[in-house]
Image: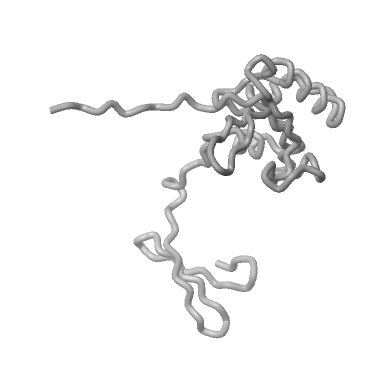
Amino acid sequence: MRVEGGFDVDSHRRGDLHLRCSGGLFIRHLVRREEHVSETRIINTYDQCAAAGGERVVISYRNQERGRGSRSAAWQVWLVVNGKSVSTDKDTPWYNYGKKTFDLWGRHERAAKLATAIAWATEKYGARDFVLNRMGDYVEREVNEKFPLPKREYKRKVSV
């Protein structure tokens, strides 16, 4: 069997795959059989947006960090385009990682700043209907319905 790139493929009984280059170089790679290959699992907000494809906007809450490198709590707007995270604010400080950030200066501002973040995202990226996902982030309704996050299963500790 011929594979893209000019390699010949020889398969063995155990599921090992040998790629033989024309120069006699052997590259051994263990490959699962097709029936055992698992699907990609969606476990977080980034996976949700990557699976949906296209341009996806997310609004997430960043908790306050205390200590020497402290940061205030904030709502952050981030963008995933075809599975790659893209900067939403080129002028933001390095510690915001290119995300448009709406800092909070107390709990009483949380709802108001969320409304500001949604308004900013809607103005910049067009009308979007945001809903809360299981991770606590606001994603587009279409993404959340098409690629829902699974319920987490916790293993109980059994006492003996």
